[in-house]
Image (cartoon, rainbow, N blue to C red; front, side, top):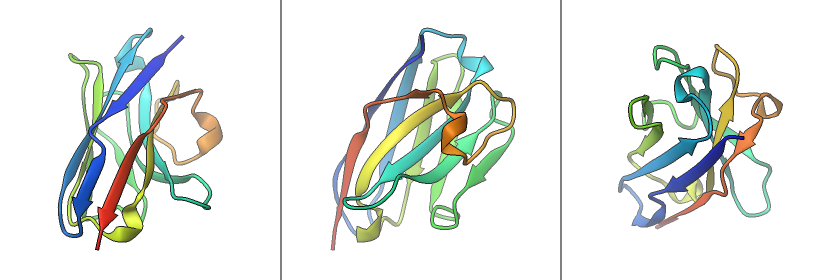
Length: 124
């Protein structure tokens, strides 16, 4: 069973930056594609970014492109989401997810394992 624990959320002013981390355990990390999703109050969960097993392929939502960077350190079993130029509309609970697939995907149902989430609040 894969366990995922997110950290790094918090309150930041618009234009600021945050770096989210997600530590994985219970599986060989390099066999997992990883994704970040978010859910704003009253909204559906939405895809943010995904990365392939070895970090070669990365995939971003339109809202994340140019502002967010996903990366991973397989030696530390950790995936990161660097978020810059944050906007109030980025306010959400951010979730890390793991999929046993080679190609990163935005499809929620492909992810079998989910973390508990970390709150990101961007003030205007």
